[in-house]
Image (cartoon, rainbow, N blue to C red; front, side):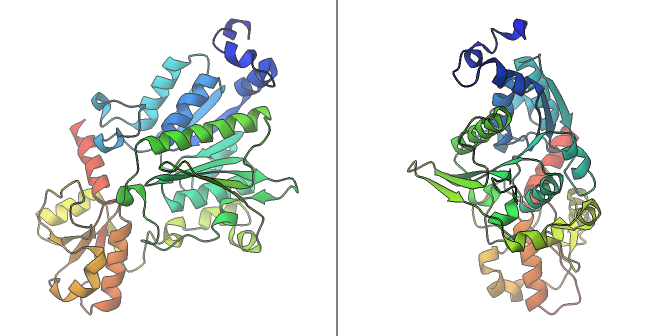
Length: 372
């Protein structure tokens, strides 16, 4: 600890924090799931603060569209794995801590093992299926969970865990069940002001430090919303609900049998989800007609033959869709699945529709991987 005094000198001289608080940070083990817009500031500030062991979970690669808000990365690093790149930079920032990179997607098969190794978890993800999986796992393992979310100009921060009554308040006490596809727009669709994830991520890092060191006024059992345009904040008290108790899996076995993709409307038994390579191969061989259901002007432009029928007007355009094998695509894969559902419900045809899993963003990632 003595040789680290200069690095942490501002903490050591801080009233109510001091050596005791810094030692708690150095002994802590924090798992950050997601190394994107929220994860970057969380990781940077926790590393600088001296959190002793940090795990980074992210299977994604750096893309040009990330750099507007993910300031841990550079243009030269496009195509590199986020978790690996982030780990290297955090170790350069603070070589006195341990950083482990996990270049895998969080699934029901690995969530339990990943989360059980850490004292506290940070949810810096951007999709509902993963959020519910992380929350349910943390609830079963009784691990504190620091949650963050952003869209357009507004962000949310919450801490899920045991309240004063020793009840575990979870994400399901805020949203018992996932919204249907299209009901809530993600950042890929709605966009986000670049500085907003930085603000919310710093708030998440702040809550992690408060949780570890025992600083007062943490957000356990509360949801804070913050508007970047007006600087308005709102604090919502959360309470335990019967719905959440009934919806959370009862044990690890039930958790690992739960299909979170299906529950969140990201899969459908009658709709084939095409991975990027299969999608491109089918276009090249003429097996499918690709249909873009994004709104006019959304980028990036699809560099392959396709038709364009925006989801907002799809039902009125169904009679214009040719009688062939159809594959819908959008930005991230959510609207394309919804489009395929609409097609099944309203159009009689011998052909079953498919959709591009992960959308145009998955195609971009595939392109970056092949370039490397």
